[in-house]
Length: 252
Ligand SMILES: NC(=O)c1ccc[n+]([C@@H]2O[C@H](COP(=O)([O-])OP(=O)(O)OC[C@H]3O[C@@H](n4cnc5c(N)ncnc54)[C@H](O)[C@@H]3O)[C@@H](O)[C@H]2O)c1
Image (cartoon, rainbow, N blue to C red):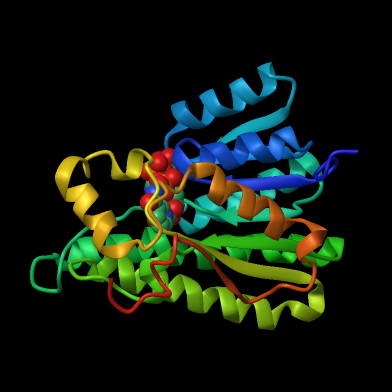
């Protein structure tokens, strides 16, 4: 039997990058995958390609910053499948800026997408998990939510908040058999970083990542599968860092 057979897995930001590959890899392990994205077209394409490869998936178009949309989304998932085993709060943006170069509106936008959406996802998914006797929540944080780098104030604040939410959810719902962990990728080539190329990108990696390997989306998705599985049954409230040594290093 495949690892996630009979499990329902919901992944936000499932239309692109790390979320897309995670949808495909959970589906390949037998999961029924809810591909959630604000972009209905990309979510639909990911669900379709999983189904045509013989997997189980359905697209759900939703803006994860909209409270009523989130409440409706998890009710719909519950009505459709009767359960939700894994919620992967993965969607996010990654703007640059300092407190003086970032507008207040843009600061609030990254807080809403990268942090508040996790509050909403947990708020509306957990009651269903509690009723069914447990579940797993994964939140994408990132190295710079643990330690900020220059010129990324909004992102670093939002991800630090997401890390704190991870710990709060882990301890508040441990007795409900719900585990909650954070996945912290370093730099991975995805559409999120499409404009960060060339010499600037190489220099950045050289300065911030001790290992010379290129972290692949698979490295992140495999960690998500591990943390969502029973192999990780005693792990909760943790940041699992996949960054080639960046966070471990004071200065490189
Ligand atoms: N790629 C990296 O180097 C890296 C590093 C650390 C952390 N991360 C984090 O990993 C996660 C995934 O990033 P990625 O690289 O796959 O990015 P990506 O841009 O390829 O995918 C992000 C997805 O989130 C969706 N999304 C954005 N706003 C949304 C909203 N309001 N509602 C619903 N969906 C929304 C987008 O439509 C997109 O499909 C993000 O949280 C990001 O911050 C990425």
